[in-house]
Length: 118
Image (tube, rainbow, N blue to C red; front, top):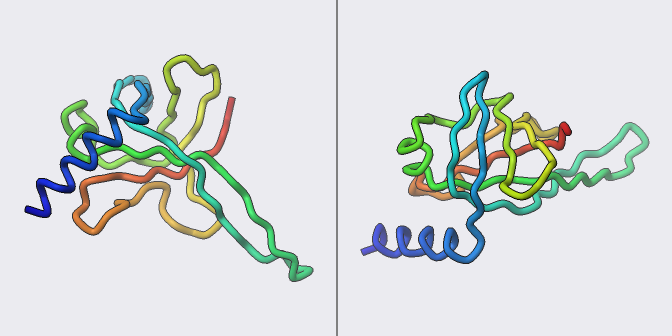
């Protein structure tokens, strides 16, 4: 029953906020429906001041990435949202987390940390 609810949530999220996103890995491009948001990363500088950086985070259903021919997102993958001219690249955030991770305990949604590169 929980799996059905999780699948329904992903469908609703894609329907409400889904965008066509082109993922480029090396010379190959994949188009997947996903959504994005902002993530806050915090760090403390040498002066003790707290620094907060907001970057874009992309979210994809893990099954959609597999269907498109991708496995787990990797550092260096580039993302271009249909209708935008900004390119984002998967990178390890200042918190030391990997560039991507599952966003839920059931491992159905990937969260990818990115930084604007173009």
